[in-house]
Image 1 (tube, rainbow, N blue to C red):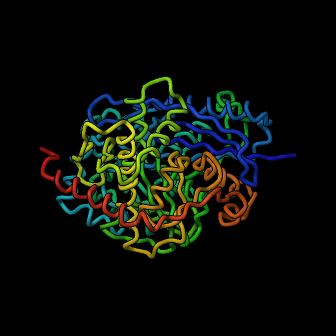
Image 2: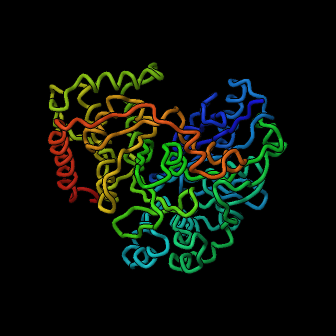
Image 3: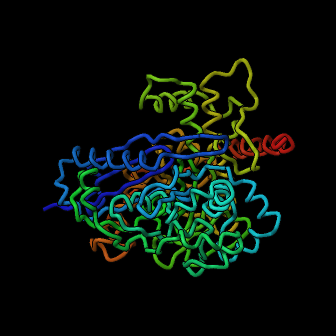
Length: 496
């Protein structure tokens, strides 16, 4: 009798569910588009009940498409975007809309903490820089602007912890996710009262759930969740993991030989090592899913979400999935030497300046939609390159970069990344790598494999490899330098 593993992945735009064999074979995939709410400038929210409904619908569709008996699903695990905030009350109901990680309402709190040296004092324990989408800043903002919300709230959850709660009725906070929130001590891998005190939110400790590991069993699918999803009641559910950890596992990253790049709403660039790296010039260090290892991350919301916006606003309805093929064809039709257009991919945030906004520089009458699209692709590559260069301050270049996310399906884009980085780029097999990473956690939790290295070896593989073109090295170096010059030239414009 065949047995299966279900991985769930909630990122910035889609709720996904995917069913896998225990050897990592992808059986069926389904997704539901997520609606975002922007009640005020800088506020990025989502209806938590709608998030659950979209997830449940995706699970139900996967089971229907696969024809698999739900009782043959060995275990379920969730991955999801990190940070943001999902508050529930004592009855398990959402205390307010969920807050997404690109939310910037708490920027003033972060600015004040930085000015007062709070970030510098917290760094040896939190191992990460401060930014407004983290729950420490969001909790401080809610305390001052929505005290009634905090009065109702009983638990502070991350996205995938909320989905796991809806599956099981059990409340836990999983370590990989929580170690990226500036709410705990990454070095000790535990909560730390002194961290909360530094941010003036010591009274928020009552909201922090018990910590679990990504491959710990954290309950079973309830009768209500079974009715919602089609899963069998009693199916075990694992702790799950931060989506960057999920992508790292699905990319085969269990040691220091590789780096992983995730191109989604957020552009995440990461590697792992046994010792945590704590440095003011590093965006974030977290606890990795593999026990005893740490994940070093450089990232910002400057990635493929910018292309999604361009498609929605300028290609219009009627293209469907073919919109991406059209974009790739248009980009491929323009030689890299043919345009000096610069696009800054700052629609949802920036890695350059807190007030920086997106823009397109250098337009001429001769330019076409194809030239603009090439600039969008290149701008996103350059934003990732900025982060990768920062990581390479702390380690040697990797053997290869494993590339995940929707952009990895574009051959023209993958070549662009390889030529700019001058590092081989490998594409892992599979279409939903976040869900595969979650399924790997489910495989370890259910005893299919003894540990993550065994599970990764059995369940992951490389689909293709793109070698860099040495002849393009100087070209992309010059284009990247121009990109940086544009950012520097606008320094005095932002924030006015």
